[in-house]
Length: 629
Image (cartoon, helix red, strand yellow):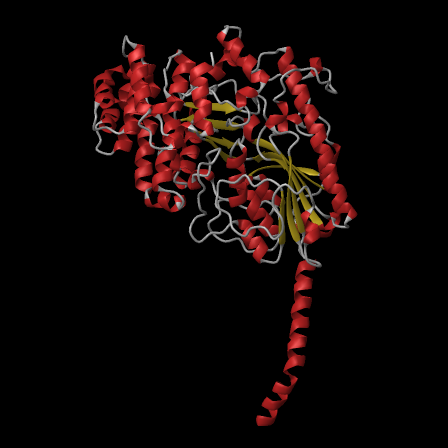
């Protein structure tokens, strides 16, 4: 025995050497059979501007080349219609409504659910080299996701990886971004006859709208050239046949009412995936074909993990749509997606949508917030400005004018027959069974994901951040109770009245909060609640947020003959805000009342703390309330 032990001791360096060789060969063999993955994202463009999806779209030969040995997805969605919210869903694999990552721009960041890391961390831990060029517009705390650079380097990060190391690379193209159509005149030439440009039925058919559509399409041509540059670099490095290439938009387009809005033009994105020849065996679909199944950003991260052969931890909300053990039949059977809209810069709203097959259901939890509610960045666009001016001049038809008026509590659209969502079927008796089915599908998403927006953002920041998913789990019963009160909006008023009174008289201030919102949704039908709501507005012991909602109801229903007095009370209550997000909520109500009912507010910003008055989003709201006619 002593001789054997001595032999092993003397041979240990040789033993270690052979073990290291074995491990190196094993790692090489594993890496050699793992694909590379590249994401190419173009900013701010829906499927509606690409010829491969829509007549009148532009030819994009480089994107189309990816489909020659790849797949075109007919139903791909971004879950949110604005960049930081959609990218947060993309990078986390968790619904933004469950994390409270759906607000744009972020005030503060949230954490991933306890015990769950970003999917990129799992990819990196498995041996992938992970790089990003260049956008990091996330509302979630991230740590150690990237192996290489992140930020505006304008380079191809895979070249920094180790020998034979598989890589993931994310590349963002800015050319189609909203800021690109913030032009101040229309003198630049465009490579299209503007008379041939399609104008959506929601828009006035004007020269400016046609020019804007043409100019935006020109930007898609420039974007496609940059897609081609990435493809060329992969080919030059001998990587094309080993690399899955995903091309997609980071959310919908930027013509008015698209980016930031739950319309199909805001969330229905192009998605084309190149299948590398050396890894065709990993995909059940036939290359050079179309996929009809529904996929969304919630699915992208777990799809990458599946392609990379990484076990998918529990806790992610999506399902893989490519890779081994994924069948084409199962994916094509998927026909649902869930999308959401909340704060967009300084503009608050609370909108949820589900799409199932050809039907789309949209739930407007604050229907008195018109879609056109002022948002400074959106209205830099000349077409947006013209649309608004024509509305106030009375020169729009009913479809075009609806953007500026109160929304329905719920809407149902057949988006195959009505792709621009102009014909609400919710009130048509022949669609009642579809309406109920879609309402239930929507309700399941809200309940399953503990939708946090039943509390306003300022409350979540103070009480739920950064561990928001855990807050949702711990407050499931309360969230369901608030949802039940909000759903009184779906009843006729006489049926809901007793439950509304119960909510207004509840000891929980948040039940009163939603009772007030429901009353504002019913408008003049709820004037029987005036005395109760006036008491809330005048109570020194009531919360600021409930006084504001009570005053909002009194203003919307013209419950007083002195609108200046209501405006002064609303303004004074706004001064009591203790945070930026609380002030923005109150200013949102003021902007809504100005836009819909021409309320005038005299505001002294010196009555706000400097931390609030100097915030850019607050400044944009104040500028609108001061100056915009």
